[in-house]
Amino acid sequence: MFAMLTTALTITCGIATAVNAEGGTNDLAPVDVVEVNGLIDEIVVHDIEQAINRAEASSSQAVILQVNSLGSVVSSKRMEQLFDKIINAKVPIAVWVGPTTARAYGSAAQLLAVADVSAMADGTRIGKTGKLLNTSVGEVSFGDASAALRVSTLNSVEAKKLGALKLTTDDEGVPVLRNMLLAMNGLSIKGQVLQTVVDVKSESGDELIREAATTRFFKLGLMERLLHTAASPPVTFLLFIIGLALLIFEFFTAGIGIAGVVGAVCVVLGSHGLATLPIRGASLVVIILSMLLMAIDVQVGIPRFFTGLGLTLLTIASFTLFRNSDGGEIRLSWLTFISGIVAIALAFVVGMPSMVRTRFATPTIGREWMIGSTGKAVGAINPLGIVRIHDAQWRARTNRATPIEDGQELRVAAIDGVTLEVEPLEGAARDYREMRKPK
Figure 1 (cartoon, rainbow, N blue to C red):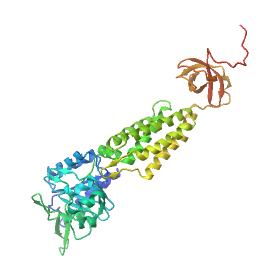
Figure 2 (figure 1 turned 90 degrees about the vertical axis):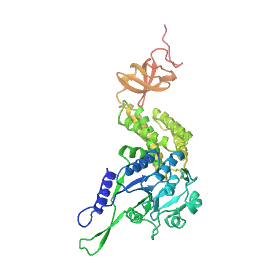
Figure 3 (figure 1 turned 180 degrees about the vertical axis):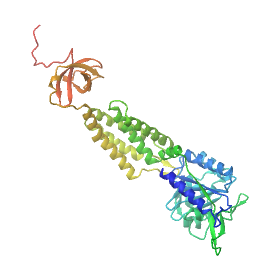
């Protein structure tokens, strides 16, 4: 909701800027601005292509891609198709790396080379392009800066000095979008001259006020934004492990509740991210195995060996889950990693065992009457399981290691805390010291 309000305010401010002193709007054609944030996945690629088609079918005089991306997770062939779309667009396509602290690495950096206009804000960096991709007009090239950008990064001053940018200004960079519009004014691109700035008289008529063209901001739709966010490494990691933990929690509670629904949604969104991002399959298998190991101790109700083993495997697999993208290796931040591991540790060491004990716990005093009561096994009991006594489920353990099958009738032999010790009605093991009644 906050993002939607921000976008609305930004568009409103852009329209207000386009109003001249006489109260009318200037006649400059609008410029479309498309945000390219995060790793470039299929959703972002489709959004850029859609923005170009929309600009070509409307009165827009140019499209500006506002880039802040550490690389792409789509195939090289798919990125080359996007590059060709930009090169063959009927309207000029500009790329601006901003705002300050923004990055453009990997294939995202190569967008600057195929765009008609490219610029950077102060404090931004581009580079780590890796292998330069091919387009319909040849290999992507940054000129003299290609070699440096292949393995390292450049700031706005260095990129301008080496000729990596297609928009040169007297300043060191292009700090905001308004400066981008001012710098683009008068450029002749694809047979048209961009007019992104107009001078209008002030109210007094004594001076001229420079106004920029109206900027129309476009962002991903709600569902597309949700899926794109879910495909970011930290969100994918947290959604998947928390979703699995919630499903395990729901498994040990009666019925299907909100934990199961939320867990299923988290796993689905996390699985979308795992299918989008470059991951190691072995690490994913180890994460699932670690959850199953910890679930063993949840059933027992006491954190033991399997909980420690599961947490150890989860820690190792989390470090190695993501592999390199075209912009470099994807690593979870320490905050994300520690938050995820601590949350799972608390859930399986404290939360779930306590929940299981509470579920089957009833007052100890006054339950001696249950000794000798009969009931049935709810599932096999060997040595732990669940029994039904007087229409209530109880946690049970076999007496003297006598296994009990599902549905078999049984008798309560003793009570140990909140656990009933049960034995089958027929064939129960007996202590050799017990006196046998004569026949």
